[in-house]
Length: 133
View 1: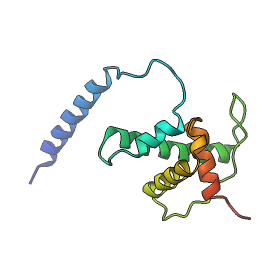
View 2: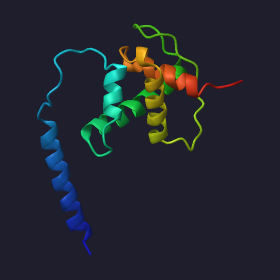
View 3: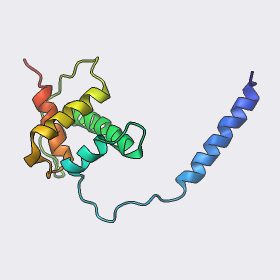
View 4: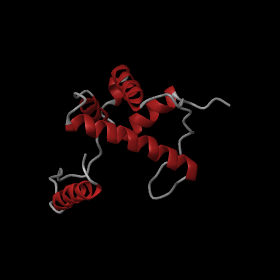
């Protein structure tokens, strides 16, 4: 059994290594263009354990949280479009389910793949999860 002190020291070493890693800049694309629907489709088609799949999952989660915050706060201005309608996603819907829905939408709408992934994602989610009043 590992003592609390030994565990603390291990965690401290791991945290220090992580801090060192964060001090070095990561390579990024030189242009600041948006990710397209086609690029997101490529990321989301990747195997579950790759960095590409991790990007997909993070992007999709961020979009869901961003859309929720955008709607909740009715954020407009600074080039932001009016908040889309709220999404009514069942609690049991997993992130993997959302990605599958996005991929199905992209497969069914090839003309939209060249557009910004943010727009494609928002349109796909509104089509699948509108709130009916």
